[in-house]
Length: 352
Image (cartoon, rainbow, N blue to C red; front, side, top):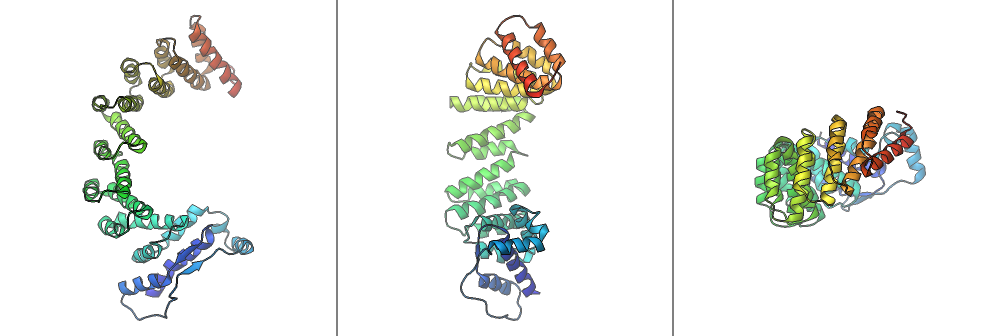
């Protein structure tokens, strides 16, 4: 039985060496030894003492394999092939396979390690974390801690957060913190924001803040806006407020629109938010969105919003769009709207 399980893991690794474009070096002794220690059983034949490099076959061999195994080589993409191979590895052989992959840096091996470690962490996050922490600071450590963090935060956010606090400072902790926080945004955006605050200011940190704040705003717009309004950094505060308004517009576009109009000075941030709100509002209430845009002063932000409004509205109801255009007074707003309508007509060949 032990021999079968060991060969199952090795066979999966051999299969991936053929099905992908990167050779994988596997130490068969490591796999056999780990399985032996875990399953006290009679000793099998001595394994090669040097790592065995599984090189790609030549092109003709691959084509022949494709003819004999069409489901794997012709229908499955590389990613699906890796997932299929990893699914065939028994739970009892996951650790042995991970040990064999521990030092591998080829893309295929890294993907295999990611899938297996995530699977292990879903079953036993503490054990998986203990194994992952053995690696020195570097890309492999960051990768394995990230997978543990994702799985652990999904099953027990409180424990995952406590684990993060005990990690030594370094790039791998930053990666694990980002992963944990993004998982937290789905169910506990406030915890995600607290985790983000422990990170140094970077574009990645700011993207996390915006995502978490947006998730919070869908449940409690006022609280999220109040939090963002207290951020001392002016640019970051404006970005967070814009993200919150756009997120809230899905449920209450009118409130979000008023917030954007009253809380922002004219500029790029306001323009981006106005366009995003227009796109969402037009899907549910184009007449209301149009009335809001018509109140804008003659600035580039209004032109951008009008173009998005007309472009989306005309695709769904060109007659209503044309009627709105006809009722507009002469001026730059009407001109911009007519030009946008004409462009949509040409693009989609819509006749009102």
